[in-house]
Length: 152
Image 1 (tube, rainbow, N blue to C red):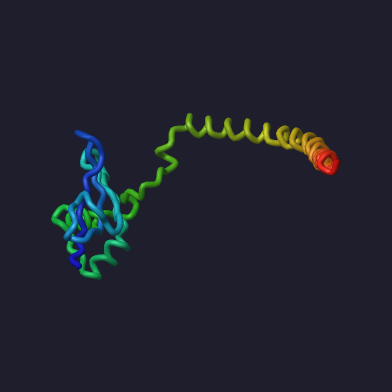
Image 2: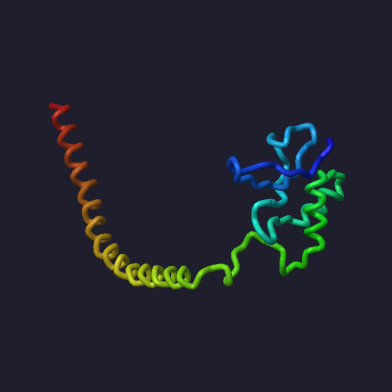
């Protein structure tokens, strides 16, 4: 099987981005693939790609042939220092302070409501068990009454 590392076009019209995939060379680039190794966004400024180099090395070791563009991305990823590499995770510096404050406020509100909800559930629980205990007795009585009617 001729395995290739190539780019797969994703996104909408005029907003294309690419996934770096491993694929059997006999399939079309839009067809079935084996694994996704990363992504590439040509319209993004700065670091516009991310690759899992461990998996790239694995596939290259097993004989996968990279396309020209995929090969240039692999070379750039190896030269790029680890601090500059895009991992896909959002760092604390990228998150606005207002968003952090809003999230903390929401967590405080949820924490205040949680004990009140537990008290309500605790009060309702015994009432529901009493009703459940009464229902089987009522059902048994109605079944006995039906059995008596059938005998008569």
